Figure (cartoon, protein in one colour):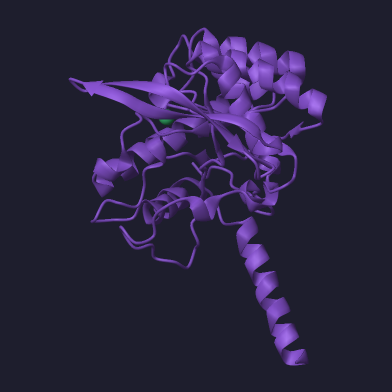
Length: 296
Ligand SMILES: [Zn+2]
């Protein structure tokens, strides 16, 4: 009996250690294309019933909306993560990148060009990932930031389904070139706000985050009709009775409604005692004792 109890404890300990680091591809594992897929297993278990939310913004930088969001975050003293498309970085968006870093937010990659990686060859994916992460490392150096944040979010959350290679194996290879160790931390999400749906309102987006933390009314999209490839959506109300109680929220700083929804959510979160934390403070996204400095 005692032996069983001890081995159960050993198992629990090893599981909890791997859970904390699970957003990194496992060093020793050769991932299998079309087998090692899905992202339910990468939910942020540490945020369950935590009353904590990490705000993440994809697809920017946007020339006017990202600065507007940065103003709100500064005013409310909230830190967020920006998953930028590195192809959008140019002379006119550089000051926005500098603000993201100077104001203490996390700068991360959402790929170079937002292609669906499942449709890319291994060489194409490897080249784009190397380019995107290298650009961000170069910018951190340019702006004097030593932030460790090589997070990478797959466009559309798409990975693992190309039959010839698995993206996690390539991530390890690219990471070894840039950092000399396994540092590229893949980032999915727990709360899909549906803020990309053109008909959703700012109030509905804010409710979607809140409902996943404390329960209540949420909104999901259903396809109304598709005419000549043009899809129309409508929002459907539903209730969340048993919320996860926290999570990493997915938003996009390219939509005005998302920026306004963020302000609504932050104010409501403060009233309800919900803590907004940077992604780096979420256990699953922690770098722990890794150094992860570019060796270029
Ligand atoms: Zn995206």
